[in-house]
Length: 196
Image (tube, rainbow, N blue to C red; front, side, top):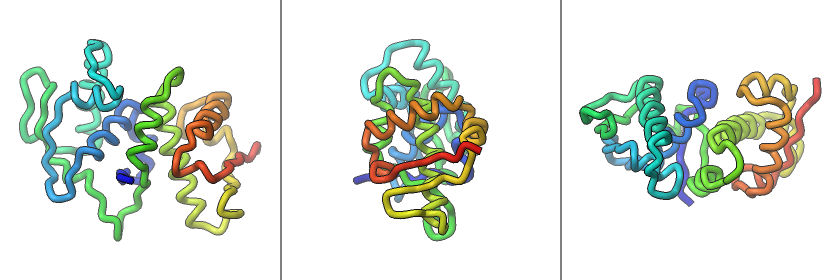
C-alpha cells in the first residue's frame, strides 16, 4: 500500500484544509528519483474530487490554495503559465529524510477515503485526521500507550479544539466518521479524550 510522508512540524496548523489536501496530492505525485513536478490546478482539483472538475469556484479556490502552499512550503517555481494554472516546481523541500526528519505517514488509500467522504467538510476532516495521526504517533512513541488497541490522550478536548480550530461537537462527530470509515492508522484503536 503506497504511503505519503508529511512533515511533522505541526503541518495541520501551518496549512488550511485545502492546502493540506493539495500538499498530500503533490506528495502522491512525487517520484523519489526526481524532485521536479509538472503541476496543473485542474489535475490537482480532479485528484482531490476524484472526478473531472469544471466548477469555476473550486478551480479558483484550488489555484489560490496552491499559490499559498508554494509560499508556505518554500517551493521553488521554475516556470509558471500566465494564468497561474500550470507550474513546474522544484519540490526538493517536500522530501523527507526518514532517518533524521520527523514525519507522519498516511496511506494513499486513507487519503482517498477521506476525500471521497460526502456530507462533511473533507478538508477539515483531513486536517483533523492528520492531527490525530500526529497525536497517535507521539503516544505510540511514549509510555502513555495503554495497550495496542487503546490510546488515552492526555490532552483536554478544549485544547484540541483550540489547536485545530474545530468545536468540540465537530471533533466528536469526526471521530464517529473516521471510525466508520475504518482508516488504516486508527481502525484498531479507541481514542479517549480527557475532559479537564
